[in-house]
Length: 120
Length: 110
Image (cartoon, rainbow over all chains, first blue to last red; front, side):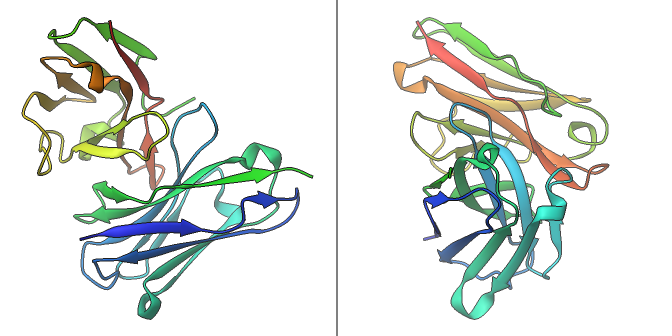
């Protein structure tokens, strides 16, 4: 059974760096075709894709956020870590990580999400 | 402004059928698989349709997906009050090298 869970701070001050961890089970990020994506959703707004890491360590980032995002993976600990620099109140959102399949043609398992509030 | 365009809202009566459209371009829908997600209030999105028209295990056959050119459609028949949710389409955009979602459609079952 595939599960994912996001963890990290719930409150971050503007200009700080946000670090979120996705801890997963039930699959290996070394398996061909698998990926882990990060998606966020500001309160009352639509889903916004942020980043994606593939089984071969290839990474893709949202063009609008690319300069602020970094993805790393720890295969042995089954974790994917997202770092976002220079946080702003507009980054307040629920952040989800999700399992991507088939070379990442979709996301079939999602974490419960973690709400991050950016405020001084 | 989302790369994929969805109607903000749709509504229909219980038992009826509804369709939700998702319009894109050749760089996304036109040349990549589309997936659809349901998000019930306060919960994480759930995959409903993958590969344009495939239902994952456990998704009832009253849900269907189709794609034609640069547009995709989600269909739901036999509407139930439990179908009230936000629905999102998503796909890869080859020009942006980015995953893109639609702006979401709120389904109301009257």
